[in-house]
Length: 283
DNA sequence: ACCAGCTCCTGCTTGC
DNA sequence: TGCAAGCAGGAGCTGG
Image (cartoon, rainbow, N blue to C red):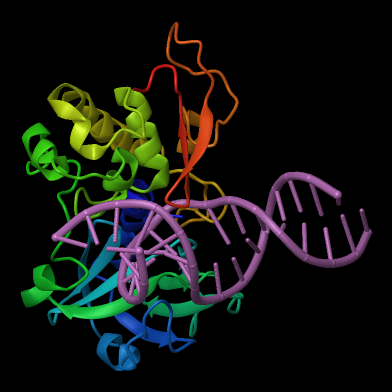
């Protein structure tokens, strides 16, 4: 599923239940996802108190009182759902059993959190608060779209010399963190840049449109609760609805929405991934 | 040092 | 209706 807006939505949805909650039960029901699930998951998490949650790139970070940090990535199909404990129900939680592809379960005094991932491209690892920035998965990431580090000067420098199409460059999490196929397509449409243009040839004038376009797309998608195509849902099962605001993604054959453009949205394949764009107004 | 392509996995959609 | 091929939001690895 998930690009930055979806992961941010999931993290925000988890926070009210998780922050300040004591883990009373933690169990993995398979040995690995993309990477092995820590064998000491239950030992290190049970009894631990979650201080707060944060997000870096497409990773959700669970910070615990004792300095433990759990890193969660949802891959393509990962989904986290919350199941609130029913009040006045003594003893164990009154909740249904596990569903297919429920891989990790946490329980707190407030309810149950379940990580479900059919395609198993997700991951869950442990790190430490002291060295979290140096974790191999995090240390080389580019800036967050809304951070001060991400501006026109930075992006121009990051793209200069890159001979790959701008589409591919923006998918590189070392250039900018958090974008995936959907929001790259949308950002390029908003800034009038062809996905086929070589990154190094985007130039300052187009960069000055691209940077705010990326910020706006991401903000609007977060405000809409992310985009639901197939797998993605918020932690309460509700769907995101940014997919109704797509200008180009999955809009092949439709009329370009830009005023007075008149072009037709095309789909091409770039490095094995679909790119959607308007050949008339994206140059 | 790039960069395009392949790969992991399941399941939904499409086309014959 | 049934079946197989194609495709999917990610990203690490390989080999050119």
